[in-house]
Length: 197
Image (cartoon, rainbow, N blue to C red; front, side, top):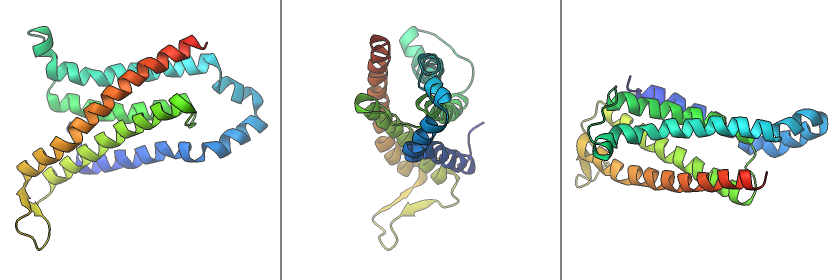
């Protein structure tokens, strides 16, 4: 079930489409506010925000299962979860795009203000770091080329293995750092959501 490069490109394009509401939300939110006050109040209301927020939180917990699968044995002794790492990684990728869709529904495409705006941009960075890394790695793996490098410079050539290790040495720590920041900000976001109820 390992996603192919073409599938990852489609998921990347889908992610771009899912991000489009954030670009045009100042226009459609004003129109919605003027034309349908009741709907606007509902989607800005507590029940809608809590329901979609809990769905997003469930997606985050499912996403974090990948760490449990990869590191479960060292954390909890001889914990054995079913499925291969490739299956769990694939699920992680698809759930990540699903989480992006849930966040669009939760935020209505609005970037918010102050903390929520920064929190959303950190989430976008988490998503972007994952997509760029996974798409680049899969593109190299599926490429028929054996050697990659800068045209005209034979000193800067690498085979697939070292190239993927070098790419992973950059994007994976970046992704993990951004996920850590996101999780901390998620805790603050949940606290603020209940504190200002």
